Length: 330
Figure 1 (cartoon, rainbow, N blue to C red):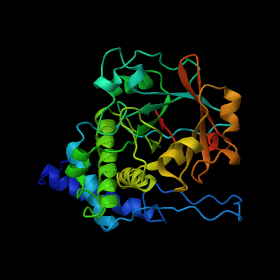
Figure 2 (figure 1 turned 60 degrees about the vertical axis):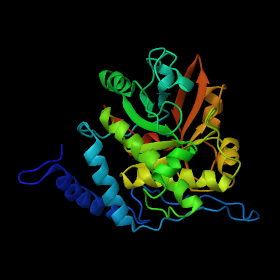
Figure 3 (figure 1 turned 90 degrees about the vertical axis):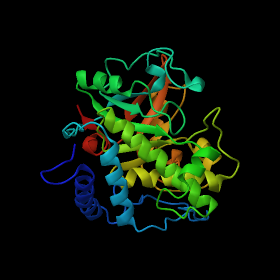
Figure 4 (figure 1 turned 120 degrees about the vertical axis):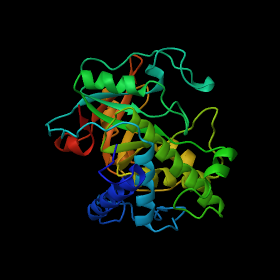
């Protein structure tokens, strides 16, 4: 994929990754590729500040990025499509999200057999595609077909992935495999979350899905429950966020204020937000774009609601003018 004359594929991957690292570092004043500036809106000065991290990496960021990009270059089996810039628009844009439930019935892991649920309505102009079959380290079994569905209709596309608490075996396997101190409990959990992200990037690239952003879905995962320790859960989430960033993607959070607090407490990463409104209405999803529905201190980008057995989405104010920041044009 990345070979060049006289250079083996692994070395070529490392050389290309090094060039990408320089480019990514130059694009991020905060030092993380894909990072977004902290929100500048009003804050409630009477409330104590929320923590912005529960665990810090110990590996040099440049080395970590180089390692992640080289590994992805080795494992990804297909060239990504050429990026086409999504053109800005005015007004609200309607879209949808799909994942393993929309795969043909009977596929997937035993806990998450696919349902054959309906694909988006013809009026949808963008689709956010799910990378997992529920929990981390499981792949959406029909992602490539869903990418082709989007491509055939020349829609805008992005990606999301559920993050979940890794089991003991996954933590043991990945505890030192990442930028965090694997001799500590939080560090080993963060490294496992980091590897969830890199595994999802491999899934995404092999399916031919290009996107400028990966939305990290933080919510309860039935049969794969989070722990009662919000700091431990937060370490997993932070590790996943860093994994996507080091792979070169912007990162956002999908959740609700209550679901987020139930998993990671008052952690405030300040990342862009995709806000869920459940079985309500387009009006309610639009309302969730307001400041009073902030999940973890980031700006609102998308709102979601469920109607007619479909997850439907709208752009929040300001998003349509910068669609290329959030979507790949197919």
